[in-house]
Amino acid sequence: MSTAIFFNIPAHGHTNPTLPIMAELVKRGERIIYYSTEEFRATIEYTGASFRCYRDTIPNNVAQDKNITRQIYQSIQTSQIMLPHLVADVQKIKPDYIIHDSFCPWGKYVAQITRTPAISSSTMFVFTPQLARSVIATSLKHFWMDIAALREKKLSYAIAAQLNKEYGIPRPDIFDIVTNREALNIVYTSQQFQPFAHLLDESFKFVGPSIYERPGTPTISVEQLAGDTPLIYIALGTLFNEQLDFYRLCCQAFANAPLRVVLAIGNRIAPDQLGELPSNILVWNVVPQLTLLQHADVFITHAGMNSANEALYYGVPMLALPQAGDQPWVAHRIEQLGAGKVLHRRTLSAKKLRRSVEELLANPSYTQASAAIGTTLREAGGYQRAVEEIMAFKHLYVNNSVVAEPARQQNIHP
Image (cartoon, rainbow, N blue to C red; front, side, top):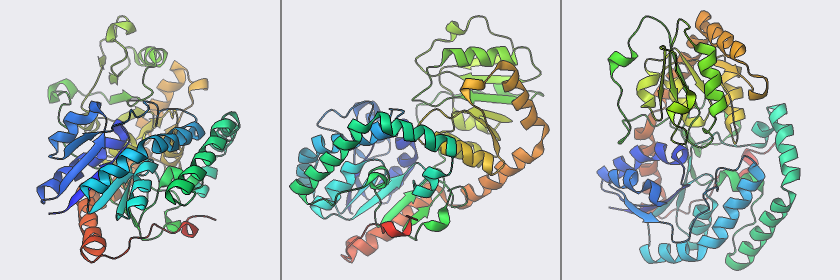
């Protein structure tokens, strides 16, 4: 039996794909100590892993600010705050290896300081300069965001210099902070869906999404989903879903249409705030998304990585309304591969929303493209493949004491 520590971001999108991996590792005899916040204790402990709450309070917005430059600052600032305690914990536990989220620099830094073999877990696209430049409108938007957060950018570099001086950690650049590469990098999508995958070396293992039955999710009967008219599923994820005006727009767009609509609005809005609902629209706070997607004909989504992967896995075409973070690049990739269309909130109307859904329903090429990508996701192996990669890493770097070197940066830069 080996002991592993997992350092993660306290967010559903970063946590959910890792849970079946932890359960399988525990099943194989591994001892897993999983760091997160109290919100995720129950789901983590359900896997058999030991939950450990971050001793210092991790900022709630560490992965939630729409300005990526501020996200980077929050992440490296969090690292500076938590490193003394986390390093002490690791030195006491003496894990055989560390797994950390790719947007979790403190995990990488602890591994470097304690000289522990480490694995990076990426729930997003692998972020490269080529990807950053691939969507012009998004690149310009983030350029101005970067200007607006110039103070935070300077502070990020100052903290990096302090960490270098105190711990000997190599000074990271911006792409290092948002990717935190290791000798093994597990990516929860397929190589075909990842943009510019040909620029990444063999340390990146594309294992596809973690599809599994999630404990604690509500149930919905097949009878509730049955019907002869197309089923439209609408959800905006867990971070930026407090959008009452958008949900009202959806009700306006699809009221009494020859469509069945399931609208998931999250826990921050009450269904009665939408007023009287048309008979063809069902509103839930939280839904069993995997069940819905197996019956849906179109998915209107924020284009979060997990939601996009899951829709593609089941061959569901998407209308993507990206909100923040990596979502514009995910949305662009969906449209680029013909699996859906991108819509923009500023120009969205009920009429445009309805027409876009009708276009996806009328043109089978969208469903065919989504299904084709879904095949690559299923063939990637899922969480079982991720566990095999982890065990192979352990055999090489832990059992044989080979020094684990992170993926070389020159393989991904232009």
